Length: 218
Image (cartoon, rainbow, N blue to C red):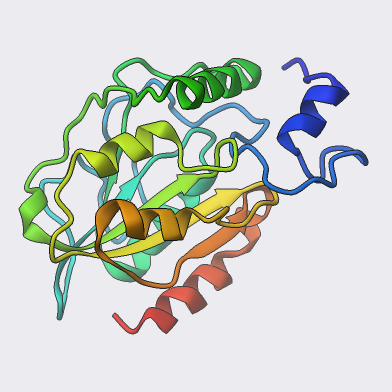
């Protein structure tokens, strides 16, 4: 895949890719081929649960829970699969009606254009039985320092009254980039402590996910 010129990398803050990329607050598309960007609404998670369009999920003492997920490169999906194993919750994976390009540069160009134009992409697979869930884990990458517009669109389209939100995200140096506070304002719901992991470190950070989930006290 062709790499972007140095000036563009510096602009979006691709920390760790090159010496000039020490600027924080990176775009969340990782520079790798996406995992099933144009696939169906389902994917295979870890062994303890199955991904679906949201028909049912695991439950806890506080009621049913669901993992709502947007992932382009697959890093956030890995986090969601581990969380599914720990919680027993199903993964509802958001799919764009107009799939994002598999090419990295084209992906970030579209993401930036959507953000500039205030466009919320149409979602191909509406979640089912939304009112049945009390606890919603929300996972996403950081794109251009913000929640991806497709994630924002999902949040805006649903009623979060009485629900508990638990965010998690992948990034390339910007942490949660203030998105946990944004989710609180957008949903009006109670937001528990989130977890942010650098995309390139997700595969070797499963213990962090375990510790974080245990600390939630669910």
